[in-house]
Length: 87
Image 1 (cartoon, rainbow, N blue to C red):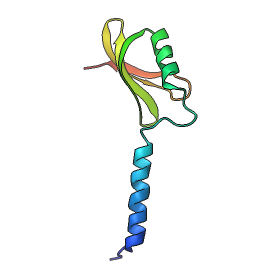
Image 2 (cartoon, rainbow, N blue to C red; image 1 turned 90 degrees about the vertical axis):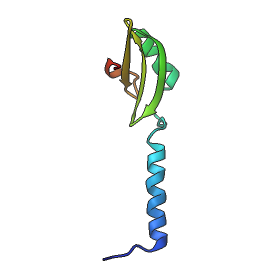
Image 3 (cartoon, rainbow, N blue to C red; image 1 turned 180 degrees about the horizontal axis):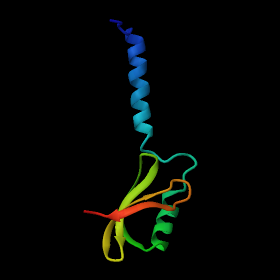
Image 4 (cartoon, helix red, strand yellow; image 1 turned 90 degrees about the horizontal axis):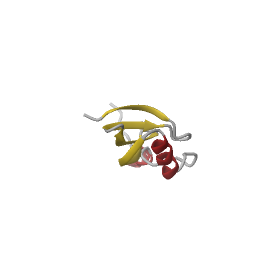
């Protein structure tokens, strides 16, 4: 069995945790959150209650046509990628 040297192990752990932390932050080329929210409102959403960067896209919850919905939006264009009733 091979044993990792402590310095190498520390480097790997640090790199891994940094990647996880950056995964839930908007990228430099992402459309600003307020512009995405404006697009969502133009598409019929009202009362957006949750909105965050997650897994490479914007996601959140809001009301559309009187139904509480979950949505995912493209990070660069703000276009709705998917939406479904929130259960």
